[in-house]
Image (cartoon, rainbow, N blue to C red; front, side):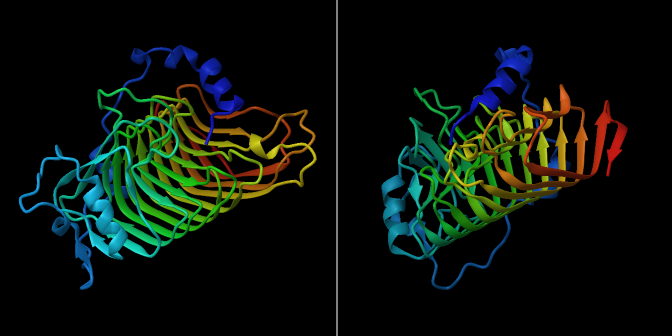
Length: 361
């Protein structure tokens, strides 16, 4: 995960007048009627009979206001039991986060909440960690990150849920707020890939980096997610698709029913890491259906390759049934006039001052 030249140029040069100081960005509370279209709140799943309630791993009269660190006790139980239910009250988690092994199902209860104390100090300081794991399901996650903590923090990492080099992972019905890094991260940090991933029905608010970052994925489905108020450190997109290394993968990446609200950037795709001399041409396949952006500087931004690059990625990016409303700068920013990747727009409605100005088919 890195910020490459495109987004440094895009946000530092093109929109410096709006992002150069704290007053240039205003947090706007997301309209409840919009959030409820994507995140329904707690979903009343029936817990399996063999599930283990993690409250049993805590002291007899556990602290229920997230002021006592229970990280190690919870981790020990998660390591032992394949199906667990989070305590039905907020719990404090330190900078170690919670590592989810393979073959695990994690249920958050109605009043469960993970409060991440941090401090976030750099790479792999994520909150819920699905690293090198397979067959993991997470339901009703409610996570609050450390961006409002007063402790000294550094770097741009510390995602609410981070999926690295993993397979067959499903995340349903989640709420993630105030993360120091991304809300959700899917991909790799070392050139591998995460495969067969589902992220569905959620709300991400006030993430410091991106709402969702995708670096390396094969058969990824992200559906029905509302992302608001992403702000703090570049790229600051609702969703950012950006490989860090040439040998990463972006195949069958499917995004649907996404709403980005009051983020500096809506959807950003940066494939510069695939433009490497003397390597086979990389192929990508990305689709976005039913995408609404409201109030970004740019609803959509791409940096696929440089005009003078000797090796450029190929493939297709398709944007279908999109509504782009009231961008502060423009609807679409691109760094080059020549892409080998075919970008297809189908049924894009553009609004300025809440008035329809154009429909592209």
